[in-house]
Length: 143
Image (cartoon, rainbow, N blue to C red; front, side):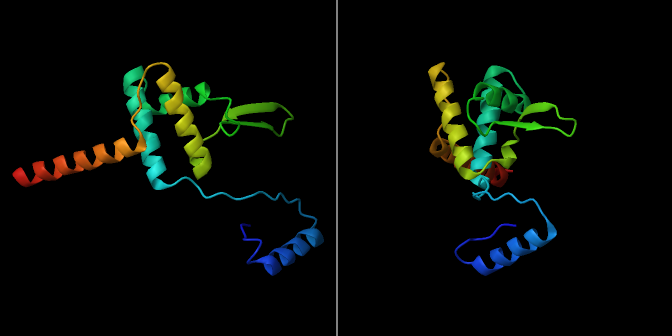
């Protein structure tokens, strides 16, 4: 259940009473909005851009980028499976919120910059995207 504690207090209290009566185990977390469409497009652009440079397809580039930034706490998920075995795996970028996505992108651009590879900023990406769309429009009208 996702609820705003300020606006939906009565609903939350009722839900907690139901949880107590039914013996449910509950976990309460702060909720953050999922990554935006613009963040997602830029993330995939830089993964494709870097993948071309380093020689990886986009899916492998995402894995390598996450491994390179493994110190970010949201990149790795550690858990104990049903057999009691400790497991660790890379998280899907689809599960990241806007703050996590921004943190990852900034850390990745910084890491690439330290090794001498320039990754275009989001603003540069937007300008290039508009330029490409305009070129496509012009080519369409010329036919």
